[in-house]
Length: 133
Image (cartoon, rainbow, N blue to C red; front, side, top):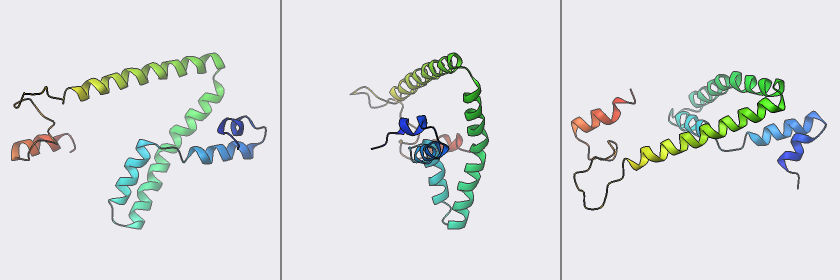
């Protein structure tokens, strides 16, 4: 079986193109979010427009990232990779601690809850959806 890395190291462009196509099948949260948005349009045409606009919107950033990666030296790419790893760890830790804030110790009934999980009242509904408008 051909590995993804062997496709990237292959001397001809067809293998690199194949690696790019296979890379498109990797899960991505933004793609799934826009797929959900496209599905919520209840129209094949509107959904296709949403996905085309998403592709056009992300293409410039992906092209710049690819070109920048080919221009940087291996030393700078390594530094960038380590910086991205540190950012990933910091953001992951921050996300975990934010999530822990929604947990309540056992026995505490009046502890604050997630605004989207609380029973819907007029005040909680306006608070829950204030961030989405």
